[in-house]
Image (cartoon, rainbow, N blue to C red):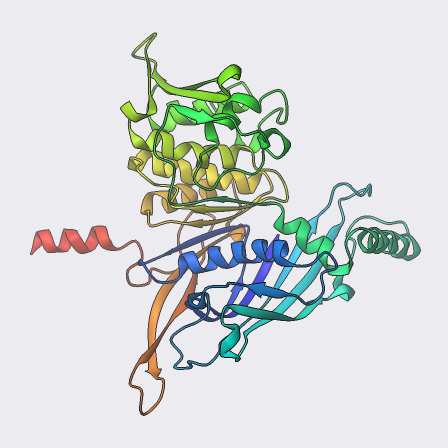
Length: 423
């Protein structure tokens, strides 16, 4: 789990200190910096692929200039720096209680001043604070605890180097659902490498049909009890998807998939209980049914230690479906995942608030981060441009689902429009 993010000069994040919760709800007006935080986490994941195997200093190529904070009046070079605190529960090590791996990863990236090397960046100060590694569990003596820690450190050092093993392990469990989802389609290609890494959900949901058609009974057994729909006894992934789809998103709806081996494709169609025997191509039913599948699948397959990044789960959904998707996201947290969800929907947020009141997720595990774009003082006396950067207000939820504050532009548009009608 990512516990704290400190980042300077990444896109609109001039300087951000964010204490992460288990459920992080990112909301605010368009262009306020919500996506920047999600893109920063994805940036960290990609960075691991750029590093050399030893994890030493490296060159990072072709980072777009607008990845850096651009409105500080400096034209020669810009610096991106960050440190991220995290813990990671590793159940592979056999202790009475799962140990907690904990550390801080720091890095600074500078754009080279040499104009002949535009587009090349150097990574500096790769630091993993190895002294913070500790094991949490029940030990009979201090000697047993120290021995467990030594074994853990030895295991990590032997595998991939001191800091990289922890950091890579955490980032490997990041799963992302993009706001730009796949257009509804009946015929989906069966990828050759999918069965080796089925957890890699395509950000646009392009392999949702493939996952539904192939994963049950092979790579995923039962949906976690915390995630199961209360009115569905079956724990299989397909049945649970159809329970949430047909009982919450669109009454009576269900999805059917079939692998056509000789054509190397998966066929997907939707049906409705009221239209017995009829199946419809995705192009001929509501777009929301196709768009919600990646969200349902990502949440229902969530496991302890996963980090889920979900953009706009409300896409093309009726308010009722939006609220229930909010509840399902809260259930993914109850199953042990950490979630960062970007949303513009009051209904998604209210679904999560109801989940808190029902006891599905604890109030202290939820943080609503309200993003605001702030203009600042002019960059210089000559250049009258103003800096524009992101500020974040943290809104807490209590046990009744009530919110600690309602800043301007947060869940207030219903009242704003109602007042216009009453004038």
